[in-house]
Length: 114
Length: 110
Image 1: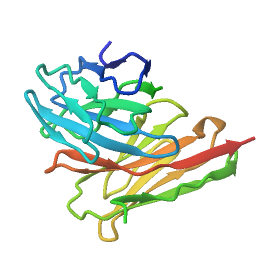
Image 2: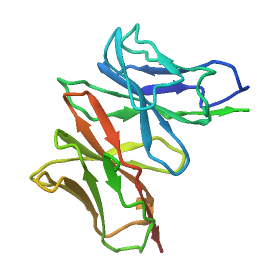
Image 3: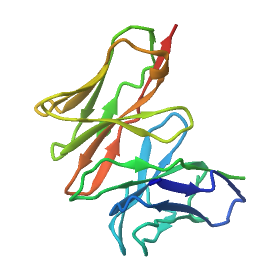
């Protein structure tokens, strides 16, 4: 089955610790995205990548970092510099500029910082 | 002003009702438009793309008005299973990114 996987589904960390969220896709999509969603609110773009080895900051990149070393993988690190990291994190992919803009989402990771 | 604005609702309607959601966007360079559905504590799922000519998928009709910069979603004959949050999405292809509205919550009651 083709799709996007995120792991883990739930993650608990102590304040001050960095944590890396996994996102893998086997859809052969060029573009990948990370969003954050807080309760009762919409999705806010953290980082996005249109192609391997390239990525851009979204609207709320401070306190986060990403890498795109492989087409199928786009891990997100939530650093200790992120002031309010508890949220629902969603990864998405799309075919890319040439193939269409519809985004397909993974099941998300709920991060709780204690 | 937000780049994409939706009426948050909630919309509470009886089964069988027709309900319409609107979404306005401010960036005239936007090129692609979508409606997503998000169930409670789940990921958003693509409901339909939106075209200037209008498009229909069963009970759902989407419309785009570029001149006025708004898109709409019409749901006819509402079902209990339509209860969800509906997200409007506007994409600037040149910038390679999308902007999501905050969503409109629909509850369909028996």
